Structure formats: C-alpha cells, structure tokens
Length: 268
Image (cartoon, one colour):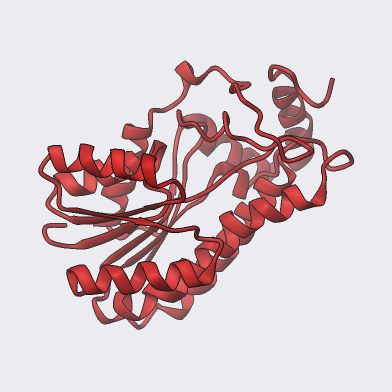
C-alpha cells in the first residue's frame, strides 16, 4: 500500500478513522470525508501527527455533487485514486410498524445511495489503476435484524450492488471487497435514529464486549492486500451467516430473542 491513494468516506470516527490510521501507517496517502468540518479537521491533525499524508474533505455522500467534488479534489491533490473504502453509514432502531418512513429513506440515502454516488465518481481512476472498491457492510446484510429495518435493507442492497460490480469488473482488474463486521465498537449506535428521526443517545449494547474498530480496520487492510471478495468478521458473525442459510426458521426465533434483550428494546 506504499504511496497508494486511499479514499475513506466517513473517516472522522470509528472504523473509518481506524482505517485511515492503519492504511496511513503502511505508507498510503489518505483522503477522509465527513459531514462535520470541526470533527474532520481534528482527525486530520491527529493523522498528521502520525506522519500520515492526509487530505480532509467535507462531504455528504448522499449528495452526488459532493461525491463528484471529493473525487475531483483527490485527483487534483494526489493525481489518482487507488482504493475507495465506502465506510460512511448510519443506523436506526424502531419497529417497522412504528417508524417514520423518512427515517428509512435517510438511512438508505447514506448507506446505499452514498456508496453508489462515491463509487461512480471514483471508479474511472480506480479502473485505470486496477485498484479496489470496498464496501463496509454488516452481518445485517446477510440476516435481517428486527428493529433495524432501514439498516438491514440498506446493507442487503449494498451487498447486491457490490456483487454486481465485482462481476462487471471481473476482466478489468478491479478488486471488489464486501467487508462484514459483526458488532464493533463505534459511535454508530449512539447516533442511531429512533422512530421519529431523533438520535438514540446511549448505545443499547455492551460496547466493551465487541471487536474494536482498530482490530476491524486491520482485518479490512489485510483483506484488501489479499484482494479477497468477502470478509465476515467475528465468530458470532460467521455462525449467524451459516445458521441463517441452513436453519432460517430457528434463526428467526434466536435473533428475535437476542435483539429483544437490548436495553430499551422496541419489542417491550
């Protein structure tokens, strides 16, 4: 990854920030995006203190014009794009019968259309450099999670898109990776949207028992080097994917039971 140009959407916290650190530590030139300039600049300054060459771009991936600008500024600064990591994402928690559909649309706009827009803008340079397109999906893209209608739907859609892209790029030398973390420590659950679009606040899960963002980022870095097609993380995640494929009825009950135990569960 020495001197490779790596664009990371949603790079100002969590897995995105950890990805910037691990790729940057290996000699990559980093571009991170985020919607809040102050938070973005704090991470840029932190990365620069680690001697990582970095460019921060304020951008909302749900806006195609922002993604076009992101790609243009990256090429203007570094001359190319080798890797795009579609990491930006939000989640929600509410039963479908209760949720305002605008909340679902907001999640889809960022988690799905944001990937389409960013990939469309960066793909010409990635094809030219035979680089990589990476989508940070979720185990929720294999197994629908009750209370997470918009999130699971967006991740199922994302994985379908990445499969199509991987097939279309088969003879163009472009690597496409679908990375599926299990529950990972980040602030995504604190900013989770409730049924009316307000932020949840505190995480309903024990973050201390989850995989760290840093460990997750290292796995994604290694999978990128090996040009893997899929990366399914954590023992629980791999078991969930396996059991859901072969025993879907059993998993309906198990997943319901697990999610109903969350603090302030919408099932109660």
